[in-house]
Image (cartoon, rainbow, N blue to C red; front, side, top):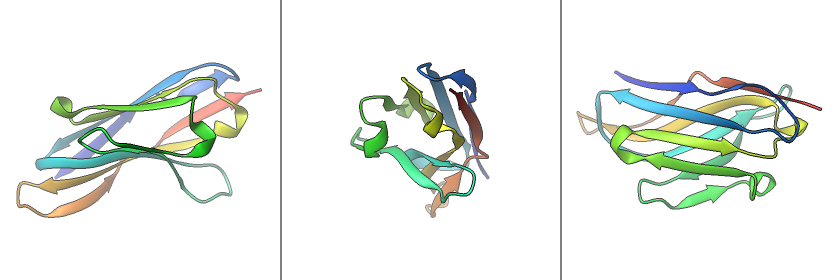
Length: 120
């Protein structure tokens, strides 16, 4: 069994910062891409940023220059440093990991989500 455990969400004023973390653990052979998605009320889930295990990054235009994604491969952990937060960033943030289990089966796993609220 695989678990993705997220932490770091909360309430912050506009212009503030938060750092999200997501750690994958359990029946893992290798973790491939990891990333963050978000879903605001009444909207579809959207990609925020992803990072490969080689460090290649894909990032949504609206967060470029404000959010930084990084990972620690030894800890199977991905981070999202969010700076200059705006009310429009308010959403539930979900971690996603594409990984291969010990049985050599490839799956996408999602975290439980963490709420980020930015007040104006």
